[in-house]
Length: 246
Image (cartoon, rainbow, N blue to C red):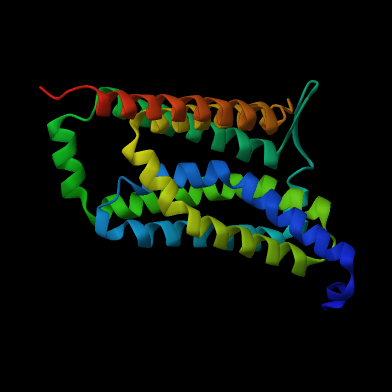
């Protein structure tokens, strides 16, 4: 069962796959961080761990049912020259959900919630918590599909794939709170993160329609935008310190 332990190539594959799972999980963790910050403070840490645990369980479950996952890539419906698979439908549905959710969050961040909406959100309490968990579960399944298909393409041993998934989720559990707090404390970074999710949602829809766009371009553009905004944040802080208070 663990014959691969003595194979150096297997360890290289494990390290590569773990790193790839972390990179592929960036959009997941940004979405989770923004959603979790809508939960009351006392429940946020539990919601983070629960959401990431859900992501891990989703990926492992899909991995263990890989025969079903690979069947999702088989033609389901053909409309002329357009072939639609089960995976395409999931990606399009997930992309539309991500677009809707990100656009709603951008509007709330830029325009601000009305006092009535804030009071309603506070009164929602537990219902709001379960609503956030349900949204995390939906997007976990969408993000897990590509993650699992990538894992199958890189490794042959299920044990390596499972270990890589668990390792990446453990890393994300440590990173989730700092990322979430930083995004919440800097509205401009939050808007950038949401804009990134809009792009990811668009990519998912394009992928569903058979148009493959390398996510690396989006990640590079987003990293550059965040770097520029970090410089702006630092500049604003220095200016605030240097200006005399009135």
